[in-house]
Image (cartoon, rainbow, N blue to C red; front, side, top):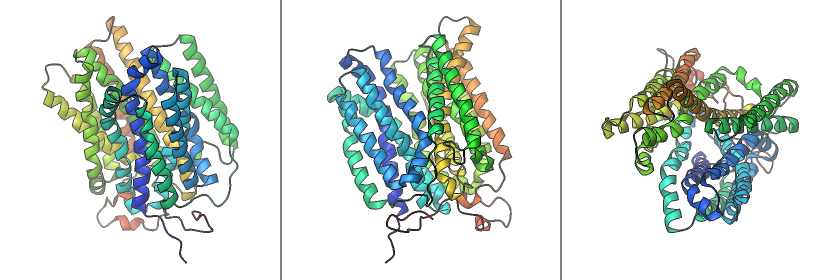
Length: 494
């Protein structure tokens, strides 16, 4: 009797729900930190360590997620990741002190490090190439809804309930997720076991954690210079040792051989440059509105969320844009338009009518999100199926690094402008200078995207780039994603 094949839409809904839980948790927590600080009797400024601990754990364990999924199976790993995140949520809710909260957040981070990459890997293995663009658009919706729903939900919970419920709300979602994964997702693993790169995990984890933590401290100016230098020195040394190790290992934890694939390489390079802008926006814009415009935190929040609305609206339109324009034109022209809109933010002044500010942020969120949809999809266009797990880990790691780098670069640009102008504190013009600097970095992405082949990813988008040539002409190309063919009791992917 034939084995049941997983329904791609059901799988997509399950993966999206898990990612929504993770995204919601982070944005809700940020709103509740002042209240939690009073509960712990801690300095509110020190509460940021709860967010940093989660990010550091992500950096350490994301590289291992794909290899773990290959060895133990996508369903088992995904289910374990949800369970670990849920247990971490319970531990966070029960935390009596700040440092126990930090330890619980690290447990959450270990689950989150596997949840997003392995969830994306599950989606890539059950969705056909022709449906990948539409599926990726819907999968990215949780990342957009979380920043919209999170702040008001967090405010409601800490005002009318207790901050503990910020974490307890993850429990029923996690339990339901584990049940649904067990029922609807097949086990998919590589037929041949590869040696697990333990040394590579230690070196890459040390490099990523130290570099990200050093960048975080430097960007916020909260640590002594020697601490930053020590962290960056250790991180740089570990990175150099890993580079040497990776060239000698047959299946390294982060496989730089993937960069030989043109579409993957350009997506990593261009995406990193563009994501610097994404990392800068949540740091620069609220400060600009509050310090430069004199707005309250509530007034600032009523403006900054507008970009997320534009991003959400894009999800419905993304397949049409990619079908009409193709990946190359989207990354070039839409990327350039998104960067120009980002640069326009530098011109914001209190005299601007509010509708004009809303319009710029709404359009920027829309086109910037379309740009990232294209990056996240074209990256896997030519990746062989056997390398898909390694590619998801590699790509997610660089996503995380580039967002952190965005905060550091924007903070450095702001501090540089303050120093050059001789201001004692940031003025409106300093924020404008920082926005323009970030936009300049981001503009390198659409320029680099000109190197992408005109027909790249046509099988995914359905775009006809030249007369007489349709996406069906690419049918002879090897599929990057495929529905797994069941074999044995677990149904391994072939």
